[in-house]
Image 1 (cartoon, rainbow over the protein chains, first blue to last red):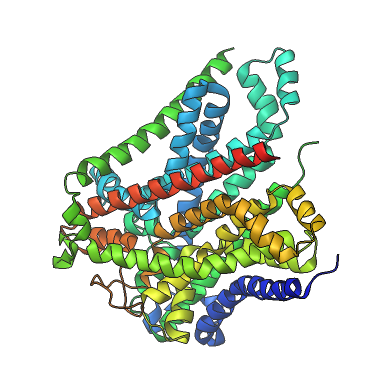
Image 2 (image 1 turned 120 degrees about the vertical axis):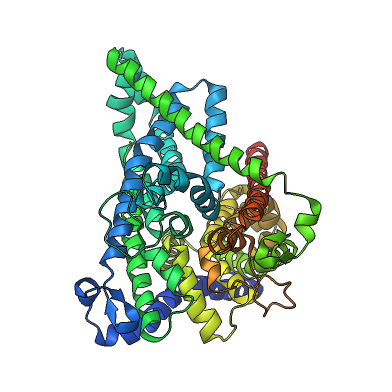
Length: 284
Length: 278
């Protein structure tokens, strides 16, 4: 179709805007690398693992305590949120009476809308003292895991619900016609059919957990140490950035940007895998 | 049969557990936050590092940060969405490039946006810790949501409209302005609301861009403390700030509930209408 001159001008303008929107990611990457360059230039990447401790002012850059804190809190949260989230989706789709199912879905959506700082605040005021009564100090890896679980549960539940909704009705009717019990239908037909969508949702949730800052920052205690138990205070990669950016200068600041680059690449790999999984064609 | 009963029991248990924790959280914030919530709390300036007084200047800063973010992000995302949905083939190289770049942007953690905003807006562009820096950082953050919702809204407008406009000899831009954008308006507003909701909830990206200062801002170049940063600061750095933190958290939740329900209602209404007109 031929375009008028006004149309062509409009398209040029729109292209400019779209290009600008697309370039932001590159800009972010460029500035992260630019800011971390002072450290990357003369500090080998292995030193972020092999140094004696995290004392960036003295040129010691061991990031492993933070890396393990992030890893453990994410794994713990996914371990708890995945079964609860899938159970939530199954509840509203196959178990609850219609009215209750609607209410429950609303509730999960509300839960998804609560800001992370509120979760963190509630965890700090309510949850951490309770854990502290069990085993001081209370602000701990466990508190971080529990708050993260609450935060990513809606993601798992809503994506699992969507995946279950996409299971062709013929499958379910066929299973019912074979006389399968409700659980037989779910475990034998619905869950396997929705598997790739559910796994993608869990990966997405894991990505959120890795990148989450505020909630963990407020409840995990923020002591730089290799976590040995659930009741230890830990500092995640994200909390470390949030805490030290306020006063970091020079190479210290650059080291924080390095951890930012590490964070971004990890999250992108996880979210990218989720994206690939969800694109996989599953039903005919 | 026993397996079936066991599964039913466990799934009900999980649902009861999740709802229980949710009501615990909500009632906790309501019980502690509601008694202190009043008109004067909303308009007064914070005193004594926020322990007493209200959140007047903080609400003003929050609104200004949101305004900067939306004024920047809305036109940019609308233009991008229009290009992607109306003027680009779905499988074109340019379209695919823009789309995947936005997918990546959507996955970037908020603290990384904070780092970027600090390095780019505060230092490189020399805006310092200011409402402008914070707002622009949030604009980058909400861009993917705004573009995706606007694109979905435009794609859901009936194709008959485009064909009819072409048959009448309308130019593409005229069809866009008079037909497509007008029809898609509720969807666009719903997307905008979702973006505002996401921006209001954000904390980590703002700490190192718009800063901590709780005074009433004089201009966009002043540092201003957003509501979420206020909650963080009161609970972590100010001993005895819990009462006001509870009330601020309640204000934030109520604000988000209002924004989200407007977005959802608009989207539902529009979905219903577009089904009827086709």
